[in-house]
Image 1 (cartoon, rainbow, N blue to C red):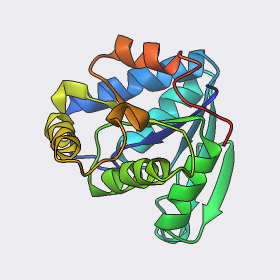
Image 2 (spheres, rainbow, N blue to C red):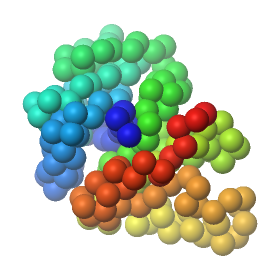
Image 3 (cartoon, rainbow, N blue to C red):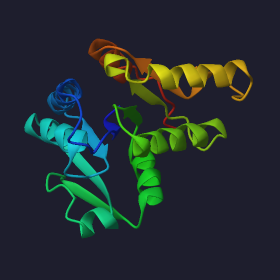
Length: 186
């Protein structure tokens, strides 16, 4: 998987532990010559992973909605910028451009992106997965809700069809190295 889509926070006010985990992933992506596909903001974990990926030799595709550009919040780091009209277009574009997607800790926007990918997969639009990078147990509560939805039959297929969970950096890297984690024939 060469093109890794990342969903993550644009907040600067989060625990440094999340920045460190993000930097580590970005450095690995750069050293492995992966392409980062992300939301293109110059804030928070988005700018952190972009900087680390680029500094270590990776390529960047920033998918930038018009409002970020208008507000001066677009990163100057991407090798390629794909402008979009709005957040809905950005989600579709990140999904299309990526081989797999990783959800780093994030807020409502990150959850919107994750559920967009999972919902589209659940009805057959694609076979790409989201990997929840569960740094410091960040996604534990959400994962419990998803499990409850499955137990109460609100999800038709096994959850493993839509996402995987990495609780450590080594688990994340192992998942990203699995060629059969997603079916790219969509």
